[in-house]
Length: 221
Length: 198
Image 1 (cartoon, rainbow over the protein chains, first blue to last red):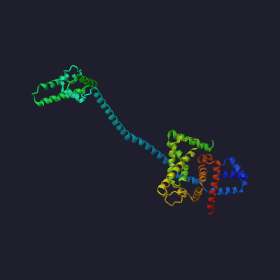
Image 2 (image 1 turned 60 degrees about the vertical axis):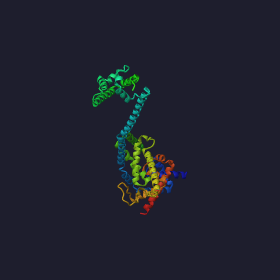
Image 3 (image 1 turned 135 degrees about the vertical axis):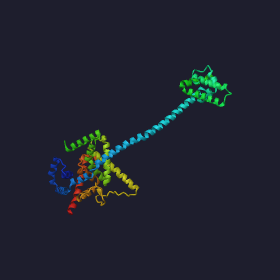
């Protein structure tokens, strides 16, 4: 019992010394400490030396050394927030446009490739001889204006390509073999340009119809 | 309501205010009310003012960024203590690794005096200037075994309850009381020797 009590009082001693015991424990401690003179003497000596130590001053020193921490923490947090913001800015300013350029280029190339492939394959599907490429259509239009314009199988789109002036010019070229070469050349060039311009003015459906008709008209080179 | 419960309640109100508005005034108040505790704990582990100051700032930045994760089952001091100890241990591990890489040129050793109080080199403004008794006191509790030192500081300086210290250190309350008694006994003996020689 005595050892147990001593052990209990020892455990209570520091809190009693520094005034941390509740009233009940304090009264228990005070009423029993007299039974252990060695412990009581130890308590008195500890009380004496700890009283000389100025805990308040010690803590003030710590508080003083820590006084700027709150300011530093607030500044660091602000800097961190700014860094996050500037990272976002950086992302928006450089990475996003870069990604858009890369994406756009990829899309453009992919899309163009697809288009080319479609045109090529559609051309191949329509005509295994591959004469109905854009170049061959223009070639045929310029080379055989009379045959094409007089072909009854061809649709009305022809009127949009060959106007009277062009046909006259082409036929004039045939009839005026003796004219000056330069004049013939100019007339031919002018007509060819007009044909190409007219061809370009066709919309996609008209152009497709025309190509199909031209294919079926069976114009020989 | 007890003083502790009141303090806990005020802490929680402050935390709510920070979470809701991230108000600088509330952040300032929160840091100010715990900065000495965190700095003291960091100093105890790192034994270097500059390092402890840096770690203290990191502790508060981590804590403020993670306030929503604080479950409020313990006091904010307990939570801050755990963050501080983790960061200090990481820092010490890092230093050990660096000193291993640089073939042991690190100046920190277990025998270094707390706060570098024996150094005669010029110190920055913030370095703590203790008087003679305080130096003896610091030296005395630095000589204590780790468990006793931790218990003594958390109980004597930081006013943590045995329950809180037990949660932090994993030591039973009975063990903590025994540690505290032995720590007080040893420090009292050191101070007695000092005063006896006067």
